[in-house]
Length: 314
Image (cartoon, rainbow, N blue to C red; front, side):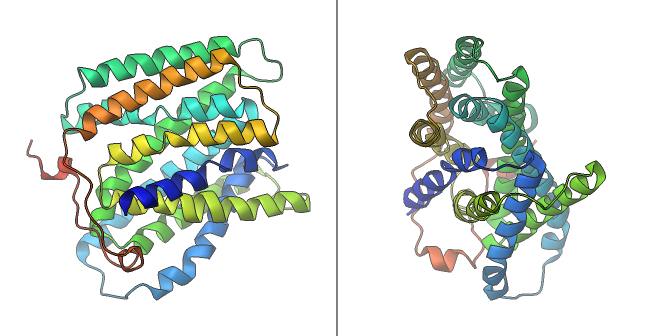
């Protein structure tokens, strides 16, 4: 059940890079419409969720939910900028280094180990990212800022995943998703107002892409990932996201005509192998996947699988 939901989520988010390329709008506007429309799409599910008196812990967690929304907002801003400034295959691959960041932050804040196979995986990913930057240095029309935005997207996605793993076990899925997506949209709305970015006047095709981005990679894709965070470790979710570069690169080749050379395949493979090695080393420390009964019922019921770091003492 868990693998099925994760696979559906990865399939959904893989199309986001291509959809962004078809948008004729600034990154901030794309992210705002994507998150705002996805929140509206999930509103009926939120209203259908069982209404119970909010526990004090749920009210206290709202601050963390707002922070999660801010991280998601910054992730989408950086990621969309990266896709617009760099080749899709490169932007998606570099932004997929977030499992390495999860390992480093877990070591710093949760005192979890990050050596052996994890360290080897980190080195492979760093070398592969450097190789991708070298292989694409001569491509015209792309800027180093695109690669930096991809790294920023990975960092904020890392924080978003870790916060989701902290919050999801004690919250219903819809009670977490709507405040997170909604607060991220509000953060973007404030930023758009301060920067003076126009929110209207775009081509009809762009508005269609806004709707598809909200429905497929966000309301379906990210929601599947957030559902999984309530049942399995953050590292397992992170390693499953590594399927996105493969799907995004193939879609970019099919619909955008982007070239996939042998060197890019080689260095991209190094990155993916490094991330997989590091994340796999962490998942091997836990048991098998939990058996979940019924996704529909799980949408309205808090998960019970708590993250390991919350069980640990100092």
